[in-house]
Length: 103
Image 1: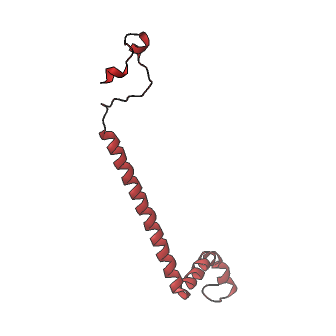
Image 2 (image 1 turned 135 degrees about the vertical axis):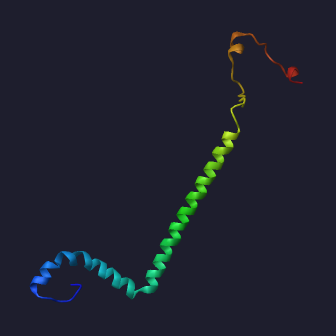
């Protein structure tokens, strides 16, 4: 029991309260008796959370920069694929190109 020994009636009334306070009291005693271990644990959690937050922000910043660069390319691009055909080539309107046409 957390608050000492009392008569039977006070123990029954405080059972529900002690049910919740006993784990908190036990944890507080553990933290108070092992101060170095507790402080190192807290430091580790803080460093871990800071690392996750910083990596997430770097990743999102990089993603935003890449999306911005792709958007800046614009829609006036011409893609040339070797071996692809167009409607004019299929209809025979264009003549066959040779090496001498490329000079």
